[in-house]
Length: 315
Image (cartoon, rainbow, N blue to C red; front, side, top):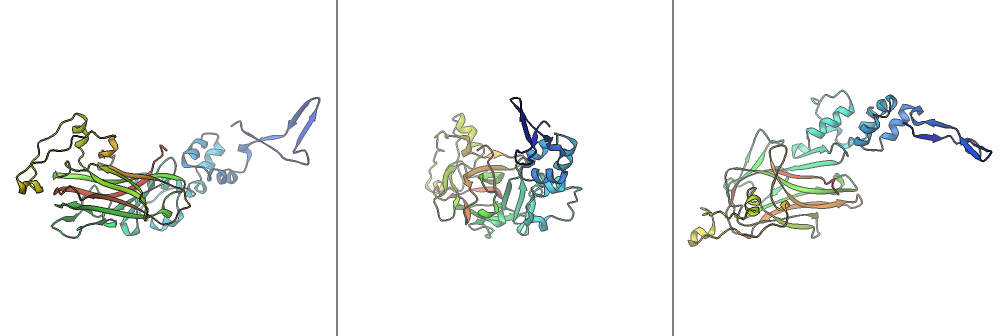
């Protein structure tokens, strides 16, 4: 590395001048003690630490030290790390927690990190959410599925009033960070009732208006809207059945693809609920909500894993 630091000695800062020129004694940063270099690197980010490890062997040793990588791990969750998670270094532990969510709060939430920045990512399990009629087996059932990080997921059986809400303390999130919230779910075989009317979703500080928008829970709807294909649906559980009527699906083209669910890398779907900026100076709780209560259509066949709040690094 060619970066150099001027030595400050005496009243002239270690510099001498003469014959129209000046010179300063300098030294390479790599000549600093390794623990000093590690301390400086700990104020950067995981991405920067990896880049700095390429500078020299001294920087590599400092950048991969436990001193640096422990600074990227929140101390308040050290007790939640299972003993079965055996890592030879803090760096390996950090990378493991980027790929494998850590269950916290009695298994009702999960925590992981965005690999490059170290920003916190949380997911509230379905059990940590307020779901109207969730404990009424006629409407919802609690099931265990192998692909879930949590012990249970909520399976929608049949409702006409869909209401899901979640809350999280702002202090748990990384400061000075843009966050987005997503409902994480998947349809089961025979899912129905989600193609007729959009759901109203929101994300914001409790007690405020927050960010509001409408989304569709039907993953196929985006494709149909893009090609203006309107299916003929005769719902067995809609109010129109009792009136002998069939309402056509709306033909309005969406303004953006964020209105529709997208596939995740873990096999689930997600739909965006909203976004906000955490300045690190605001106290209180954030609330996320999903409501489909106006259409009157009965719907079912949805499996809800939870709500994820993660950094939006594109901002």
